[in-house]
Length: 316
Image (cartoon, rainbow, N blue to C red; front, top):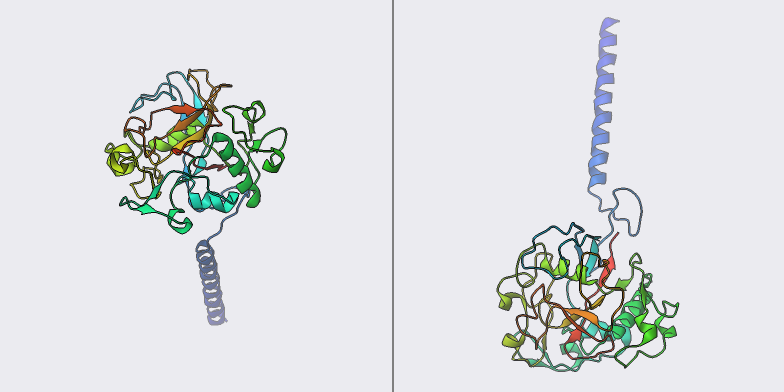
């Protein structure tokens, strides 16, 4: 009887060990699965980064930092909370703009990275769209958001549907369009605030230009374009966050009104103004304009062949 008991005990031990081995194997298999929850609220879930975008880390700026190079946006005493956001790693291209809007307004000559002039839609599609106003960029953002079943960020005259906004203004300013509201929590496309733009352009680094202290490594500007037009996007070195052409190629519209920045300026910029901010320099701009700290501006209705934009999206 004792021998039988011992044998039964041994069988029990083997069965228990096999059971534990089986559990471990199941856990191992499940850990290999790629599980993402788009738009989910479950703890620990991750949302896939949109194609062509990078995730920019959040920042808590106390206003006591020393910025290299010096910043005219992150000024002494200005406290900012920059939530993490997605930013397109490239400027909106002519091909992308035409796919959404049906036409390409660009007038700047397009060239490849070797300076060869390009013609034809298929060849110029990777050059940044230009000759777009701040108003035009809002229409594009909401139109693309709606096409992709995202929640539009911008509202004009109480509507988020650009078809309700009537014709895009051709004047320097338009009172109704200048009163546009932005829902920064919507998951659609929008322009970056000036603070978001500069935070992203710096890329966690301390370079004069976005990604380097040597402008020719990262920027298309007057000295290396001979002021003859734009270049294909993403043909220069990226900055620390994986963003291309934050210096040079095309000026990029930002959401903010142009105005003096003080310690009390809101995170979305001055409350009012007559011009909107442009950042980054362009193919005809000089090295000074291409600095990560340089600020520029123009009327929101202005259309120049050096003006384009870059998209961001809410990431939380």
